[in-house]
Length: 137
Ligand code: TYD
Image (cartoon, rainbow, N blue to C red; front, top):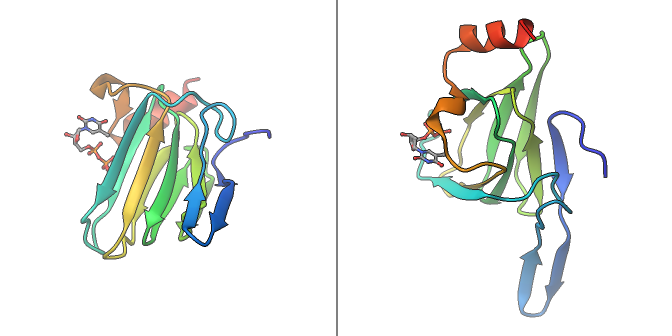
């Protein structure tokens, strides 16, 4: 599997009469070793989260329940919107991409897998600063 830019991923799902299971293995199903897991729920439909880029962290976002959308901007004029609406699909977000998460359903549980431990200093929370760093590279 080749990972180029933000993209939807489909994960293996196994099911039998007992129910279903989705499997996500670091460095196999996603391009990084998983160092951090967090999940977001209880966000109202009109809330926009994210609104940052990360200098180091890569992410995979999976709506394990409910639905949401993720909008990404690369700072070079390209944008894409990903709909997360199935527990066996996710979106891969490389580092240095601006992201907004929004349109949360009431039952949304958004699982976030990250390549890095939390470090507030690697978050860029100002869009102009993001543009500057992207375009000065
Ligand atoms: P924030 O980055 O604003 O969340 P989102 O990306 O969904 O908009 O994080 C909310 C708060 O939680 C903020 O004060 C930082 C803190 N936080 C941690 O301490 N560790 C973490 O791994 C994350 C993701 C956030």
